[in-house]
Length: 211
Image 1: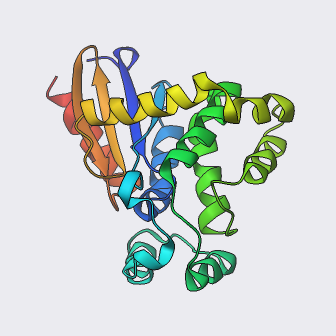
Image 2 (image 1 turned 135 degrees about the vertical axis):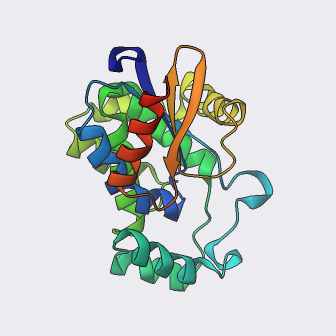
């Protein structure tokens, strides 16, 4: 199996703390394998009846402490205040639409944009249902702000977000983050959770050796 035949699929959710923690490992691994195209797919963790205010998820502070311990991820003061106040509604559909709008303007930056969205929430305490958050990210990456605003409500953007949810289900991603390695029609699970970049490398090497 040559690297030219391979690609990565990253199934994530913008409101997933473990994805935030996994971000550094993933980016390090990807920087070491720039020859591997990466597709970033929104998973839809907080949709439907699960789209609730932060207060509906009292386990989050403890989970965040665990994520910090295992991954070194830093949760910002602004986010901690947001968590304590508790009224922000976790809406993965809105976040997926926002990501879809950003991705359409810079598909080659999809992984960086996903990471930037999570930093906006988990460090800077920004809502991922707020158009202003995406305008800030567009400005940061030099993207057309008017195109972004139009994209946030465009039917094709919304359809792409919903398509992401369907793709995630078809891929069998039941938890986030899930990093997959694709070779043609074959899909292999590469990693997720609190895996370090070194463990991703080892897993990748093992998969390559057996092909």
